[in-house]
Amino acid sequence: MHCHKKIRDVAMELAGGTYDIVMENNKVYTEWKRQNPGLEGVALRERFVARNWSKHIDAARTTLGLLLRSAIDDKAKEEIVEILALDQTLMRGRKEPQFIMGALPPQRG
Image (cartoon, rainbow, N blue to C red; front, top):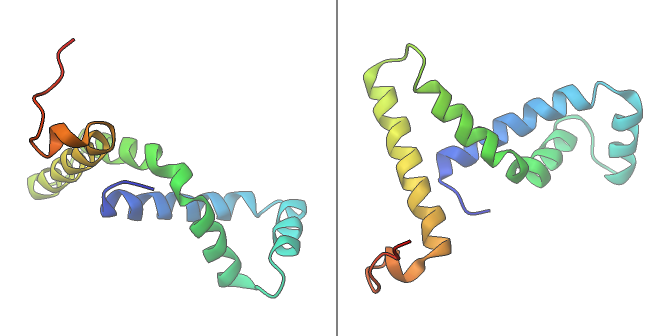
């Protein structure tokens, strides 16, 4: 998935949290274990995170955005703003690569 590496890190943490909650259900855990024979404990969690972190990208972006409203120091806020701005450029680069590279003027309307 195409996103800033710090957003990926947050998405992976969120996927890990999802694993912790979802796998409390013994039926779900048993099925996940059946689907991943030979894996135990941490390896099962890592497999889940690797397969599902991209589903948490929007939540990771939102989480970082909401942190800007909280009482954190200015340096942390600046870092978050930079991460979100760079991530936005990556997203626009997928949609309008020639514009991002300067080959075309921005589209109007």
